[in-house]
Amino acid sequence: MLVTQISFFVLAVASTLSAIGVITFKNAVHSALSLILTLLFLALFYLQLGAMFIAVVQILIYAGAIMVLFLFVVTMLATDPLDGEPRDRMPWQRVAAGILGVVLVGSLSYLLFTGTALSTPEHASGGSFSQMVAQQGNIEAFGLALFHGFSFPFEVTSLLIVVAILGALVFGRKA
Image (cartoon, rainbow, N blue to C red):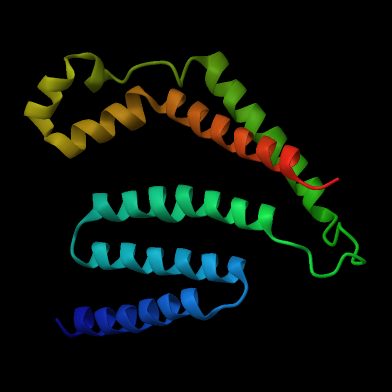
C-alpha cells in the first residue's frame, strides 16, 4: 500500500510539473513535448488503476499519433530564427533514415511474400466475431481481431498516414 501511495504522489508531482511546462514554455515544440510527457504520465496513472487497455490506447492514440501529428504541424509552421545557420546539422540522420527505410521495406516484403501477415490465426478463423465476444469478452476479442486478423491492413494504414504527412511537409516547406 505504501509503495502505491508513494508512486501515486511521485506521478502526481511529475505530471503537474509537465502540465505547467505546457503553458510556460515559450517554444511551441518544447510545449508539445511537455504535453506528450503529461499524456504518458496519465497512462501511468491508468496502469496504477489496473486499466491496461485504456493505458495502451492513451499511449498509442494520444501520445503516439495525435501529438506526433501536432509536432509535425508545429515544426512545419515554425519560423527559423537563424536563417544563416546551416540546414543539415546532423548529417548522420540521412544514413540512419536510409538504413531504417531499407529495414522497413525488407520486413514488410518478408511479411507479404511469406503470407504471414495475411494468414488468419487458428483461434480467429474458427468462428465469427460474436462467438469470440461470447467466449473471451469484448476487449480480448477486439484485440485479437485487430492485431491478429487485421494486423497487415493496420500497419499499411499507419505507413500510408506517415507517408502522407511527410508528403505534406515536403510540399508545404519554403523554397
